[in-house]
Amino acid sequence: MEMQTAEQPLLRVSGLRKGFDGKVALDGVDLVLEPGMVVGLLGKNGAGKTTLMRCILGLLSPDWGEISTLGQAPTAMSPALKTRIGYVPQQHFGYEGFTVARALALHASFYPEWDKQLEQAWVQRFGLDLNAQVNKLSVGQRQSLAIIMAMAYRPQLLILDEPVASLDPSARRRFMADLFELALESGSAVLFSSHITSDLERVASHVALLKDGKLLLMRDLDGLRESLRLLTIKEDCRLPPGLTQLGRNGNRVLVEGFDGDAFAGLIHAEPVNLEQLFMELHP
Ligand SMILES: Nc1ncnc2c1ncn2[C@@H]1O[C@H](COP(=O)(O)OP(=O)(O)OP(=O)(O)O)[C@@H](O)[C@H]1O
Image 1 (tube, rainbow, N blue to C red):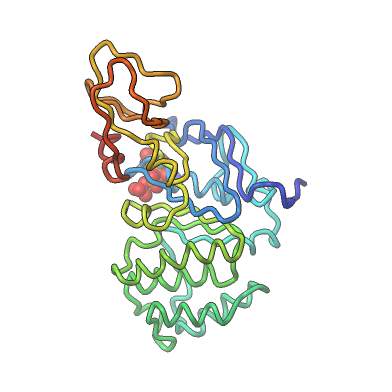
Image 2: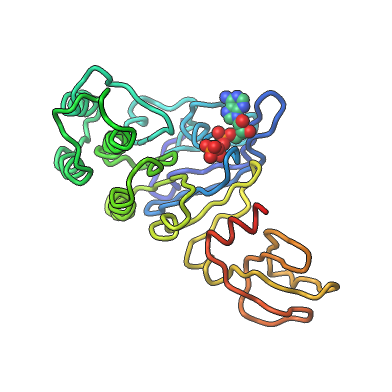
């Protein structure tokens, strides 16, 4: 069994393919997560985000390719290793017959590393009522509880499938800001999917962009801001070798790797934010 060492990344995905009923959901995905990385996974509905997360967690078996999650193949992960991973799925939940306090206590009992102080701080932050019945919580409150349950034991790898979709803007902002801190502080890595590009821009260290099961892009956000451009070029223009074409619409080409140097045939280069990037790639 492969064990995780200090030099190994927390997650390594190589050449991952997964299909359902002959339809490709993931098409050769490579991804590496190192400690301290907060990776925002962007992609439209059906792009493959949940499938990727479920493969990483061993809930789905890949058709092809290799995954090492905390140094082990996810489909053969030991129970001890599972307690070092946190997951908030899109749909949850259990603990229906319990109060919030009881549900948290029960959940905590599975995790030797549970941090009670962290739990309490987050209960306060989300304004959760410990005496409320879980089955009477709102969707957003349930999501808050699921987040606390997934991160209060400071997992090394935290996987969040649209964690903030049901949170109100203030809870969302607090959560996203603290997520980043938590990852850095605990030396862990976070992979979260979101459609809210402004959240992603605010807190992610890296962005991964899935389109039709292919990872079009995986980069640090600062580097991406610098090197991502929407170019207007002449008809017969050839792109220099250092540029990666991400999308094209007539003489408008979205590229990564732009270093500011003009080249023959370039008419105009404009910076793009994540939302524009998303729109350009999904015309
Ligand atoms: N269990 C399944 N059986 C059949 N097809 C599936 C299954 N799970 C996912 N798919 C298909 O795989 C593709 C990717 O789905 P996935 O749920 O990974 O997308 P997503 O990016 O998470 O979408 P969303 O943003 O809507 O959550 C879709 O075409 C979906 O219909």
